Length: 201
Image 1: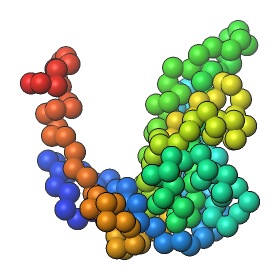
Image 2: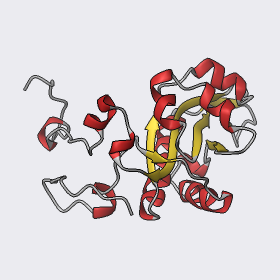
Image 3: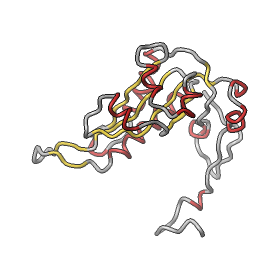
Image 4: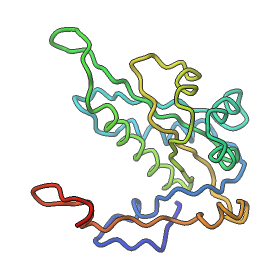
């Protein structure tokens, strides 16, 4: 598994959660389709409203016909390091559902929440298997939406860059300085009892 030994939670957070982080240094190696689908299968078991499962995972692997196309939608900064990874998985979700009562389409307000939950499980599964995952939003969403041939009622949220972690020395000096697990806001800044508190408290 990947590890982030310097993280210090305020309570007994599970190691599988603390050990997940988002490196950018990758070994330029292939990933077997069976292994990748194993990670995506973990996402399949995420909770979803009414068990609609609105998420879809569209993947491209290194040294396959889709690879350059999937990379081409990334902003230059992300492409500079993601091109060494093994796979890119675009996370999308359907924004509508068909009512079981009326048979008519209606908005699905939890589609993004559900897709995010699925994406987290994919990352945890991959991390436990010794693979690194870096989620990104830095890509041309319109080009990717068109290139993936998504219907209009599907929204594109993020991409997961998956690969075998490499030594930070393989990165540029700028990226090398950032190649470490990040900290988090204190719990009192994000968890409030009873009502919301402004950030300046």
